[in-house]
Length: 292
Ligand code: C2E
Ligand code: MG
Ligand code: MG
Ligand code: MG
Image (cartoon, rainbow, N blue to C red; front, side, top):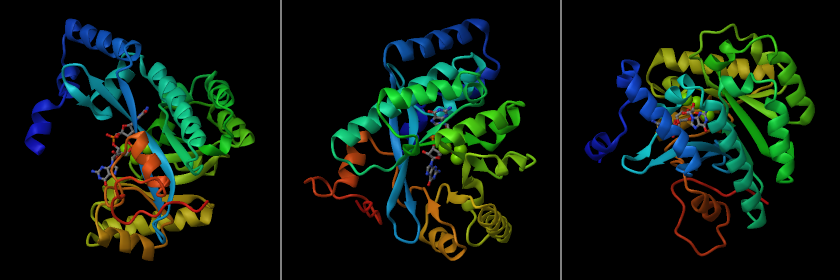
């Protein structure tokens, strides 16, 4: 399977660094067409309460169904879209599609869990950002509490003086923020006390080595202690093994995501998972649907 993936993967990310103008323009055209031709799709990865296995949220993750190359992953095209100045339009599409999906799940009677959306620095830092997000929520009659905005620690570094004002407005509106990929950004951590910041996502690179790697174990424990004292909810990313899960539960981690619990799912799979009364294929592994 790895071989097939390798062959089909859209590997222009590294080459693009050295790509000539013509190649860049072709990619720019393809990415713009991707929006116009509806080639983007969302998948949703569950986030579980570690102690119980209960699904408490899903995270929207972007996929590009390229007409010739097949499924293209964000690592391949997000950095390129950023370089081309297309990321804001893509993020806006993701936000609109996510809110439409939440509304569709609500109408289908799916229990109302939190839905996280990844936001680039380019859009988060834009003066119209909060206004656009709240307008999208309103257009679907969704309460702000349904949404969680994920912004990576390294994106926080690119943001300017407006960040505090943006965070305060989000907080006033009731929209929470998670710091994504925490521990990889080499930043001052001052933003952890900003209003609206309520979740801290511990990067997968620290989870991978658990429980054996003593450095990863110490760093993870320190991040969990810090989350606790700052009143943030920690979410561990990339949990793949029972041993990692057990370590994190014992260390007091509240929430987690990873292939151990679920791969990213299509919208109808999320619905089947959260509505077990519907006669559908059995969900994977330790997942427990949320209480109503
Ligand atoms: P992220 O927000 O940190 O998302 C987690 C990534 O880890 C996802 O990759 C997910 O599929 C993957 N993952 C989850 N559990 C496991 C696990 O147990 N093991 C391993 N090896 N991987 C796991 P994906 O979907 O390829 O996304 C990569 C990154 O692209 C995301 O990292 C996020 O930073 C960015 N991204 C995804 N969707 C969007 C979007 O709509 N807008 C923006 N601006 N960025 C996005
Ligand atoms: Mg994320
Ligand atoms: Mg992450
Ligand atoms: Mg990441």
